Image 1 (tube, one colour):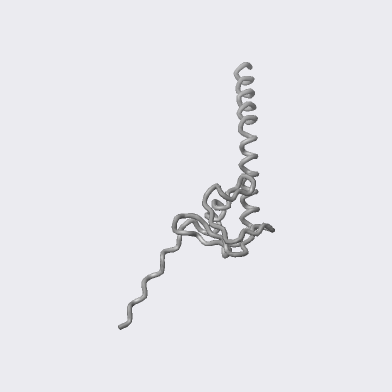
Image 2 (tube, one colour):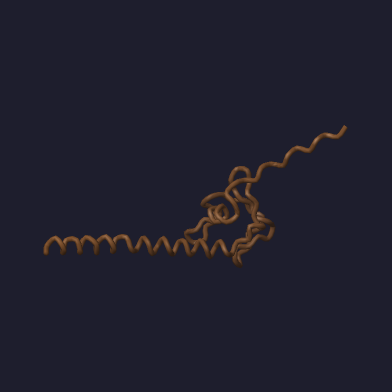
Length: 105
């Protein structure tokens, strides 16, 4: 009987300790998804150094970001980093530079 009681207390304690973290993680994923839905990848360009540059009238939802270059942990929406959202949605890699055109003689 004591062993069953101990196991029940242990399970209850584990659930009450982990449940808030699971709820917080789910809420964070929902916020990221909602921010990602408000971002148009065509309004942002990935730079060779990993930073992003917004177009002249780029928008995230109703917020306009005018010709701004930013990196990680610069533009935050709540706890969400816009650079991380752009990496996930629009591509984390920088496109290769264009190939040189052959010289005409």
